[in-house]
Length: 330
Image (cartoon, rainbow, N blue to C red; front, side, top):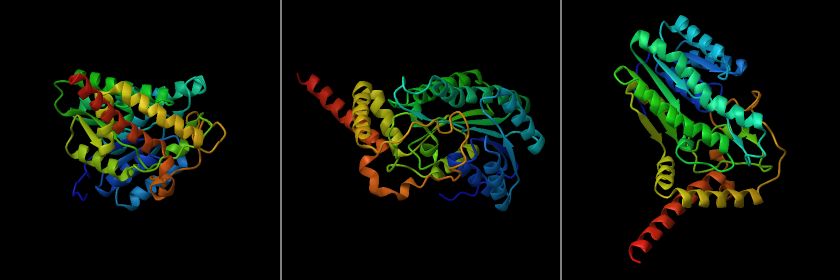
């Protein structure tokens, strides 16, 4: 979708900017002239992205930041203000994933998932809200994902972090009631074609391959631009996300059971691999693009965990509706 936004008077901070959705957001906002402050753990990847953004005609500052460290988040905010004069929007996007039975995932990995995905967002809000109140405006965008609505078995810590983000954001919105020019926006994208799966910690012992239905991270980048232009409490990206939310909201037990069945079936057939902590504990050198290339690999769609989850959600809705009708006529 083509827009004619002019963000040349805005300074935007993007966390988790070194790849995936964060990188796509940065390049999208650069086209509209936003001054960008790019944060992630990988210094070289950030500097390369900053150069790309500058080639699109805007200013960009790379600030290597560990979102687990409150001191580094505070330093990031201070550098952003020094760079741009204010912070008009802060995009909480940094996130990690760990897959496997909860007892097989090392305790420190589960803990780090929570710290990055949930505590990191809380620390960022703790840091940025005083800036927003002082300047009497600001937009905080939390990239939560469909995982905030639909639990994923064998990703328990990830699910806990995303469900926690939903509650945190709702509470924060309540605290900011009356601050009409300060907005908290929740973003719920469906499954995305990013390097996230290559980066994930994996203790299933099997190779995971996200394939269609996946969406381009560009769609999320466009949604972020729209939220900066016209803030709203929440925005969903992709029909799949809406389907999953409805399935779990209406028939939680059936949807969860169907999902477990699909995942277990996939894991029995998938290629065996070694356990890995991925990028959860330390950053990795690979996977610095916005897209993961999964949309091009359509040949393996029949073995997709994510496609299976969508099918499970649809099945859950269908079975639940049939059971409901059966009870009404009994």
